Image (cartoon, rainbow over all chains, first blue to last red; front, top):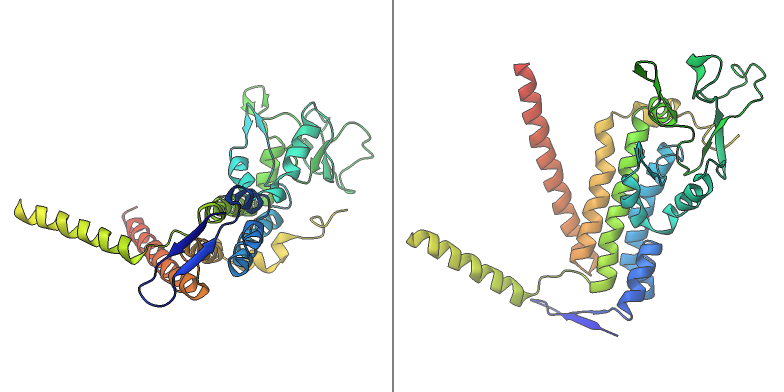
Length: 228
Length: 74
């Protein structure tokens, strides 16, 4: 059970008991702040939990539950999910949805339904089905799922022009909120990686001895430059 | 019917906020989390975070100003 002691210029040295750092790092990843609660570093645990989770859920909210999804198909490579996965358990439902829809299946937790790509009225393809435009349509529909990849085919071409697809509709309907939501959730995931580091290694405190060493190196460099 | 269908984003306060202001909570959160990885004491974390946030805002302001100036050449 490693314990790190950081001597201070004045006052008591800072002592951090990391307990089992591997288990703490895993807990910190699976739920932001949990690793720090395990180490009894409650203030930092609450700080990480509130900051990271509020950022993540705010982004997920303004993205209307669509900005976090796992898709690695050609034409729809969601690289942002690799960053969003950094937040841990709150991003795992996207993997469940990805597995469910992998072979064309419908997602869990359906948010809305859309007309398919080959709908008779091509101007309504991929549009949301509403009571005003459904025309008693009873055929196959594309389903938007919570944290599910966009359904239907991607990057379609109709004759000589590119037709929109579900992801295109998400961007159009969500306006800048879709991108903002993606940004917030990506940043939340990346920030949790810092929290995982802190749980595993302790804080990156510069001790007085390290500060002296850095300052002496700077002085040596400036002396060399002045001699040249 | 789901919770997102009853939330019309355009009619919420969010629609009245210019996009640049979305940077503010991000700066606060990034500063706090980064500061927390550099210190253990809460007071030191907050002091470091404040310095970081001021630095971020200052840097973004300079870049914003330069881009604004460059816009006069278009």
